[in-house]
Each structure stands twice: as C-alpha cells, then as structure tokens.
Length: 323
Image (cartoon, rainbow, N blue to C red; front, side, top):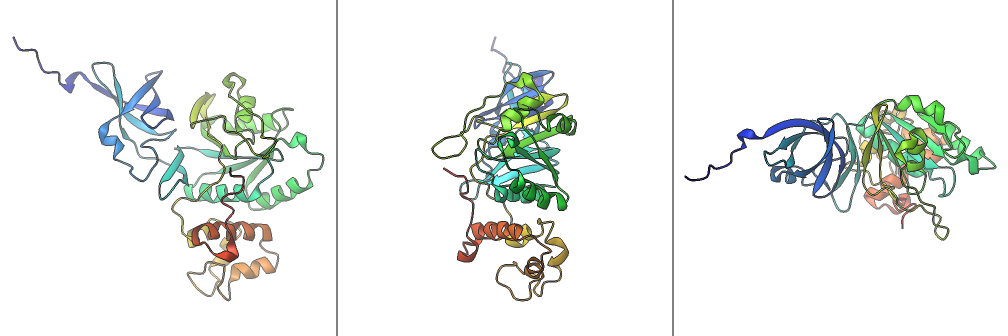
C-alpha cells in the first residue's frame, strides 16, 4: 500500500501577538504560550521595503502544522506603526499597534538631546500616537533649569512631560497608571535608561542594563531587539537604543505640519508649498521672529529638513549621539 500523502487538512490556524521578531523567526504569544514561529515563504515577500516582515506588537495569523511546527502566515491590519528610516530606503518598524510611546531621554549621562526628542515627536505625530516625554536620571542633576526650560516648551504644546528617576523612584508611581492597558513602547537614545525605567515599573522583568561609555559619553546597547513584556492588563515594549532617528517617508512639507507650534501659521505663508527655510513671506519664520514659536524648535526643524535636502544652511543632526 502506498503511503498517504500528508495534506494540510489537519493543520490549524489561530491569531497571535508578536513579542519579539528576528530576521528568520518570531516569538509569538498564542493559546497562552510563547512559541517560536518561522516565517512562511509568502510572508517574506510581503514587505520588501521593511527590514523585517513582522514587528513587535503585530497581530498575526499563525498556522500550526500537524508536525508541530508553527509558521507566521500573514500580518493583520495595523492600527499604528512607529517607524524610522533605516539604511537606504528601507523602513524599520520599531513597533506595531502601540497605544502610546514613552520617548525616553536622559537629563545627563548621556547628554540631554532635545532635538532627538523633537524628531521622535514628529514620528509619533505621523503615526497618530500619543507621546509621553520621559526625562530620566534627574537625580544626577544639581541644577534642573535647562531641563525645566525644555520641558516647558513641550508642555506648552500639549505634550505630557515627566521627570523621573528609577534610582530614587521619583515620578515612577505617578507614571505607572498611564501604562496599565494596551501596548506602551519605550524608545530613545542608547544609555538613557529605558530598561531601568521599565524594570522600575515591573521589577520582575530584570531587564539588562549597562553603563554609559566614559570615553564617548554615549550609551551602550543592552536591548538587542524590540520585545514585548507582560505588564498588568497590557504590554511594555523595550526597544534597542538608537543613535540617530531618520524620519521614514516624510517630505519637508509633511514634517512641518507635524510641528504643533507651526500649525497655526502654515496656512498664512505666501506659498502653499513653503518649506519655511528660504521662502519670502513665510508666516512660520515670522512667528519665530515674534516669539510665537521657540527658536529651539525652529532649529530642530531646520536640521530635520537638512537631513532630507542636504541644504548647507539647515545642517542635519542625524548623527547626534551616533558612534
């Protein structure tokens, strides 16, 4: 008797949540378990411009074969995407389906980088994600005036700004209730204390941390891949530290409308396509001159535009904090 050819009739499909992806497989939570799932061949070609076919936070269809092997077959529609520009034209999706972003920056060690925060705010605005600007290591400061000035600029624009110290506990209890539901992603420069912050919220996580390089004053990577961790009724997503944040798929005019402080003035510019860099009769530049837009925010904007256009007068800060 000839052996019967195995069919897929005994396979089953289910929905799962991607906890941590790699180039070849992903850890997926489904049926109450965390399972290592390979990528189905059809999935590998589904997002050619992305660095990986799936991202942490993706809701996916998983096929469990009768052999016990599990495969990610497809990605369900995403409600949000937090992404940055990778090498060339490829996009790195940091996390999908997040409900909020903790933009984590440090008051010191490594140095405070408000322009990097501004870049990430633009990405959050583009993704439609609420941002909580979280300034860590405030216990190391003897003078908080510079930090408070930057915080006041963001607060006046309606952003939620928190000063915290995982070491002393300052601000931790006040921030924790914000994170109880949905997916919260922590993103920021290497060494600012994302893992320490998430461990302060949930000590059982015991995430790896590292000191800042004394020679360069920059952080070392401790998290190697974006990973979701269970927290109360939701999830905390720890992400690898970034050295720069390229804005994915945004033209200069699209960046400008993501600046909340520019929005009241953009329609009053003489030219509809005004980039607010060289054009005459620019209402945004006039607002800066009149003190209605803070000069530091305009400087951030010009550097973002410089990263796209290569304009000598708006030099990019994309390497700020880089290796």
